[in-house]
Length: 272
Image 1 (cartoon, helix red, strand yellow):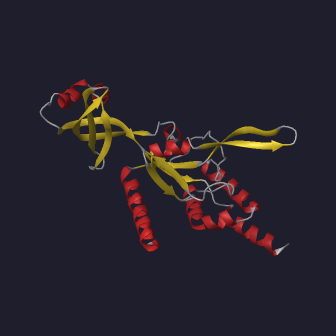
Image 2 (cartoon, helix red, strand yellow):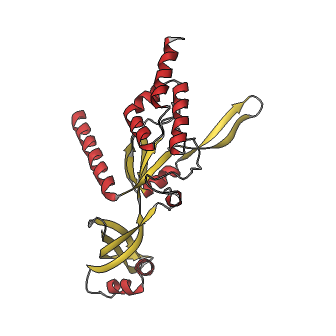
Image 3 (cartoon, rainbow, N blue to C red):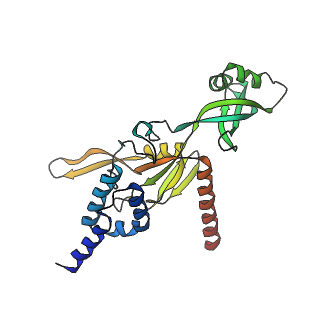
């Protein structure tokens, strides 16, 4: 037996008997670079063992149709992915602060409202909605609560207290698939409302739902070329396929973003 084949068998032996999800996930974290650099036979064996333990493939197919992925500690009825949840989560707020903005729209001045809230679970403030019309404000808060805001004509800002269950932007921990070819960008670039996030592949990261919506809609046409038929479109490829690991919190996202922003500031300082 060739020495190279012996090394491959030894590598496969390390993980082929793993039967618990926590153990194989911890192994994957420590050996991710080895797995990515391994020969096809090792990658294929690891993917098969990953399916056996977790229920889905380690190497995700390049497709716009994504299955639901398991959340740790959740049963099958509680599994969901960002797309099926419309990238939102239900959050309970104990206080909603509001600000009234006067804007001219179609030659008429109208009142628009921006809302922030204190989440009951974390006791921290987060954005809720901005530039809401009076009708939209009533849809979200209900007529009674909305009138507490709109009737305060003499005030430009204020707050109301109570218990408010609102559908707001959710957060998920995901991992982006490795680049499939030299045509794929090394990192993931997601732009939403003028702000760009640069994300490493094959690294767990917490992202807001609306950035994941951008990833889901980032596609390109896939073509083949043959002498008989010429250039022919055969499908659509998702630019940034990812696996959903679990539902996360805004605090986790902000902590990771602060760390990333600090790295970028230090890099710019070195470059200058």
